[in-house]
Length: 381
Image (cartoon, rainbow, N blue to C red; front, side, top):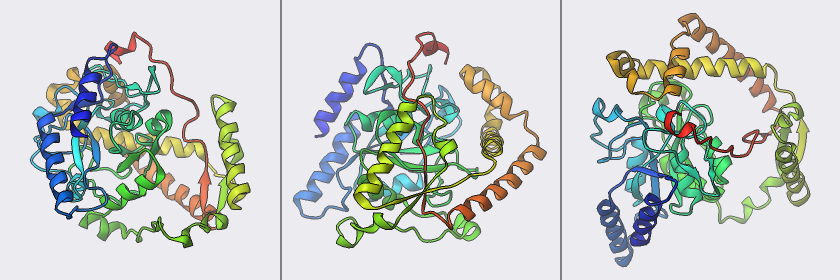
């Protein structure tokens, strides 16, 4: 399997146009991990259900000995990787074969996956289209069938968007469920590390493996215990019938193409007809305000994390869209950030009230399908 993976990666390198999935990769490390896993199975001692599974790690999550560039051309020169990120260490202890660092939109500050530094990852289903971002490489390598799973980061759709556009499963959990130690974006309040997989069941398995808050978050946030289904239990088979699905029609239909909302509507109807789920109409107040609060929150936190390097003369090495985004984010004031947090508390209250009536809020993940890649964008973003 390892040799087939290595051959496939060589094939991807030689593709024209270029479609880089991994930007840090060592075939010998893959062979070494695969040999160790094979030996454990031959001895009857696999470490877990994930032993021997091939996984890629997004380039803003530490995976020793690979550098963490955050998709940039320079960040690894200032931030040395000395050990695995907490989530990666948990996967390694499960026997996962970590194949390397996956491509991404520079510093996660974009939703297309465009990357002039290392080349833009292309959608495996249609190479002339974007994967979505910022976890472009992780989503594409799973969609291409080369890895069963990958880890991405998500503060504003960076796991969910490429997963949607590439036709795989992406999970953004509640903040604090997974330990952010060892990721470039480890000092905010919205960013999480989450799995990208080919099916929901695999997402559950990987999520269970990386679960666990840091000590600081456990004390401050007091996260409740996660509730995961037992996949081989007959008791789980009828649980869908009890679910109430909240649908805000105005938001549900706010898409670029009605084909998307119609497809999602068909899925809701199938859940109702097959499993007995009930769809409940809801209203989510202040969606525009929610978007504004999110932009200010993630913008300020991104600027805070990158500011020391940005002011140290490195901004000229950033891509144009990164520089534009950081210029916007740096224009936000402390007053803006505090106001955004006040809005977040109010919006959380609205959602708490909604979840007293429904179990899930359903909506299309993205309002459009994968967009075409403009040839002019490949060099400058």
